[in-house]
Length: 347
Picture 1 (cartoon, rainbow, N blue to C red):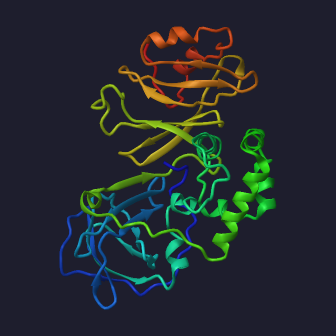
Picture 2 (tube, rainbow, N blue to C red):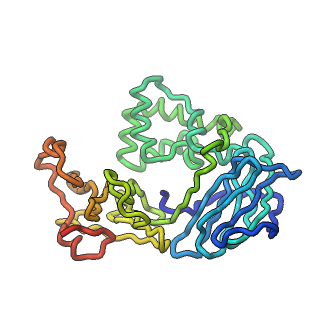
């Protein structure tokens, strides 16, 4: 999940949307149909309901069937903004509706290839990138050094010129070193060429719309964290026994921000708690898991000294290979037990 589900989106004006009441919907559903003129059903497009009227911003997304019909199920009883997005279309105007409504939503076709491509996934835009070295090693280092943290291909990464890319790479020491390791000048040349072709109008191949079982997917999202959140990992159950804790809290690790995040999917609330550490060194959680007794555990980095401690759900022989004086930093167990920090530790 992103730190916020309410991203800034560029919405283009579309044909109007009007509610219809001929077919009754269950009390916690919003149903309806999506068409484009003249009464053409739009199959495999996303219908999105989102609201800020719950304790944390909330969004639900479903896909239309061959006839353009959709069902938004299990919605809390508040007002929602309803809108449509689909490949080959421009985003629809928003209309307000509450659970129980049945809607007729009308959308319009994108006027040109550039308008249609504005909503393509970042990976499709990245497919236009011509790597300066055609080797598995270079591509692997690019993915681990750049793409692991940044969504390369998103709007802000594909509109810079050469100087802009160079400045961005110098903003953090790790990015600066990564660029040098990849070959800074060839990398900058390749990035500038990629961005230049896009700004000149080049677009990637259009993605296919969801088909078959893909249309059965229902996505529910809650906002957590803030503008600086890097929710590196999240967990809702014990990975070894995923039947544990149904509908329980979802925990997240806010990498570099010294916090444990939590969302309650039943009450639609979100919180963030600072993580106490021995010596008050800042905590940068990395990977979360949940113990059968309810313990939220993660990998801890001591930023000032670059040391790490690995907390595992149960003893594993791999831990014997990590015995080193360098791995000394630990979460303050007693502080975690005695403070409400969003995690529960066993006695």
